[in-house]
Length: 249
Image (cartoon, rainbow, N blue to C red; front, side, top):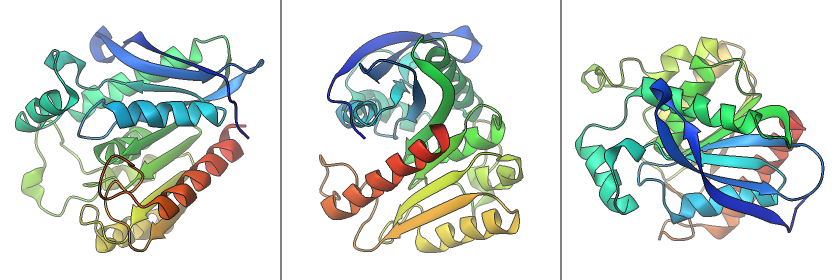
């Protein structure tokens, strides 16, 4: 299922604490109502590849919004802004959740939304997806974690005021189906961490499916990076579209 016609634009959304930020919004132009997807960007930032991924989801039938998690850090290239955020220790989890719920509210307010929303994230956004699925369990009907690192936190010293709880410790709160996409050559998360995450989901009886790809590492969907693996990426995207169509309609 694909929609050759789409509209994409930068919009304003109300995020955490009512702050107004920017988001990239793309939707198919086909008549009728469509499901929505909130795309949480990776740690490099709100960059060109994230815009491409947003349009890709729209092409496959999902009104998709990717909110700029770093808009409070001021202007600059995605690399520069991302570097400032990393130097500051990242973005607080509560702020990420608040901004993501704001992006979801933007989608639900659109006249073409069928009311069902999914969430997907890459890299740090994968971790944020897991976190949001647990902290806002009634908001989303499906979640896709693409190689989210630090879902499991092995060093307690890594927890702090911005990230007070490891997402894995909130797994019992997840209600929606979860799809995980991972490369077996990745180091964050590595295979052991993925195995342990799966073990917790299984133990708690969650509705989940994990797909793991040989000869693929971190960010293997991203054609702009040396890590890109076209065959594995094509299969991962296909599984993502099927998953969202199944659970979002």
